[in-house]
Image (cartoon, rainbow, N blue to C red; front, side):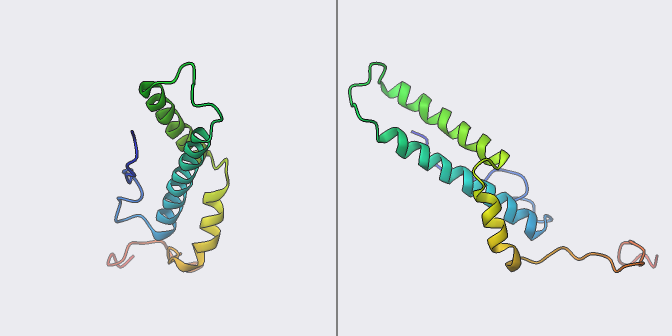
Length: 112
């Protein structure tokens, strides 16, 4: 049975990524977890226990299939949960500093 939640490599593991990008990545992962749990609950709420093709292997395959579907749906923003979370928490994260209007975009310490 696949129950573990793992943080995927990428933006969340990158210390250089800004907080807004990390928030977006975390929101997408939350949406995937939520969708996965919703699909799992839907499968468990079946009416008949005597499934013609029911076996542990079939259940494990369906769980992997649901997990993949949840990842795909959250990656496309199909449920919209990630967007809502980003809007909700966006004001709490530091925005990346933008250069002042008319100022050259030179790295600090170069004397540009």
